[in-house]
Image (tube, rainbow, N blue to C red; front, side):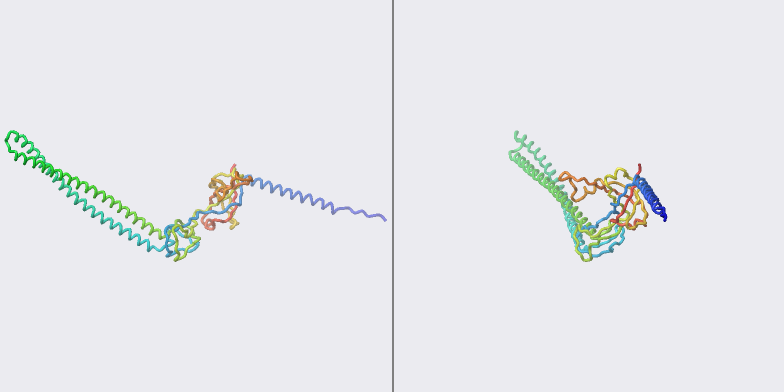
Length: 352
């Protein structure tokens, strides 16, 4: 019997399919590689980024018991809105004490002014007495000189001459006493005016005490430093708070931005003003754009609690990251959804 010969058609078909599949895969890889090359030749990406914002801690400036709280956790508040009231009884008393002290100091000023006026009048009288004594002394001096010439030729008696000399001595003593009294009155006026300056300074100090007491009293009313969302409330009504204690924090409105930590090897192509595509992990379907705003002055590691010092140990080169601030260009409806701390991915479209 003759043997039948069969043609291996199926293996030939398989041999043709494999190259086709490899070609398609290769073509797809080439297309993907070209697209990636084109993309990364114009983009710098990083997923080491998050949303940031200005968070203002509100601190008690005076101590006391919390009297009232006018907001709830995560509530939106407006700038200068009263949020917390601290019991102000002690501070009102201190203000009243300061006002009373100033009133007392003011009364002393009035008494001192009256003394100055009285002493000024007494000084004027002493001056008049000194001028009168000077006139009498001048007359006595002239009489004594005249009698001294007359007694030589016997025109007047020795007794008359002695009387003229005695009158001169009395006038001299009276004049000296009047002068001393006048000087004393002038010095007394100066001393009283100096004392008045001291009292006036004391009154000014009392006014400073009043202003300080008013300031402390005003601090018992805690207002919002800015508009935003109040959070991290750490106080309750009746709680004793100390000056410097953080009461709550406010995430400010219109302060949301992105901090992207780019590798130092990526910074060569980044410039201020370049467009940024932003993908937010929490909202994957939300397309947001931004703009490169500025660059941090140092790497993140340098701002850490224990910055690395390569000179003190074995050197291991690690690629550092530099924080880059990115402004978000979006409407209020989008910005209201964003919260500091959310993770994002950014892609900077740089220019040649």
